[in-house]
Length: 130
Image 1: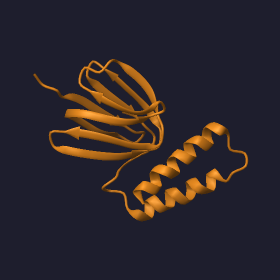
Image 2: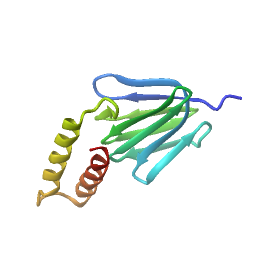
Image 3: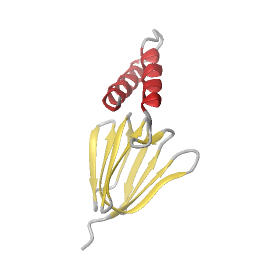
Image 4: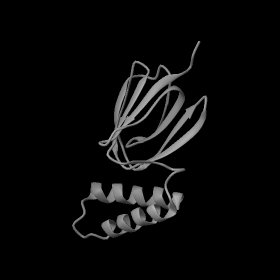
């Protein structure tokens, strides 16, 4: 019996990724890191800044995501996000640029508690990549 399911990641520009041989995905949900396997209960959740880890027969892929929505239903995982990068393709300059921008946003005195939480999460994740 197959333990695989399908994932599709879509951003505003295009269908970013579509794979059919996925065995596990770990997403940075607001509730915490969430592991998804075949036949997982149906869910819809919001994503916070973090790393999406995709395990498949072809290996492991890691993607940095800033926000989005994840839905799992009938062994199909859909991720809708406005910003996603393959970690192996992103260069250190881009990470440094994103980190500097996030640190500046964090210092804004008008920032809401929710946005402060998201910016701090983004900073923590980017520091691990830098």
